Image (cartoon, rainbow, N blue to C red; front, side, top):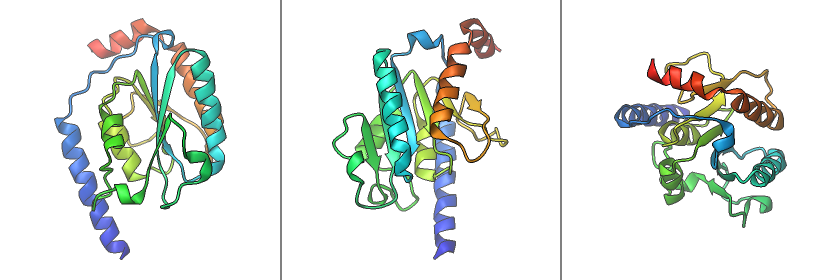
Length: 191
């Protein structure tokens, strides 16, 4: 059975690669003070991480920044803390196609939404979340450092030691985003 899962994943990855080649996305980031919308892609299998995301949402809300989170939860029944939250959308196995690609309206809307920044919190590299991250229309994507940079969808990668603490990761992401000089980004884009 595991063999078929791996074959289905490989086909899903090939389809994603083709879609990425057809997708045109323009890199853009001016400065963190102008950010109005942040999208977060999160592996929700660790319920203990949710309070950190909730705190992050609250902190960004105080800065007048809208935060929307899309997550993947591996079981059919969601934990109580994931229900009835307007800024959180959960994708479950039943919302994946045969090749593990998300097929829900919510996933499509997240991909099409032009967030100022997308922050990827998919440390286990779950394919449904990688799919969303890769195809996201966001002009600036942040994720965990990967040594294999050819297939990464990220414009900024944060290098952290394992196991990665979500709260610390989010602090580091904001710290580095606030340090970016708009002139440096324009220079990178024009090269």
